[in-house]
Length: 85
Image 1 (tube, helix red, strand yellow):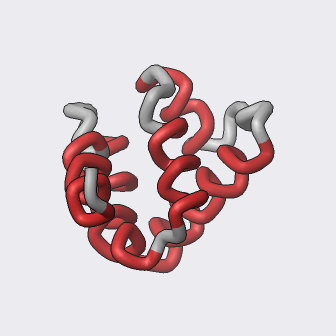
Image 2 (image 1 turned 90 degrees about the vertical axis):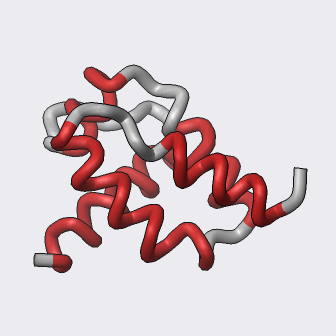
């Protein structure tokens, strides 16, 4: 799979079907996905395998992912949402 195909696939996977998650992940994908390094793409890929309930809990700050790289990415997404509007 080419890098462009991988990014397109990740962008599609950011559509979760839950409005709250879509409002966080969609803009992040649009703004940041083109700039993410391969290791960051791996982290996003792992993040998107999490259950929607876990994602909501992480994004709302109720819980923290045990994996530090996932926790860092969650914080980046939260920060972007905070400063976007």
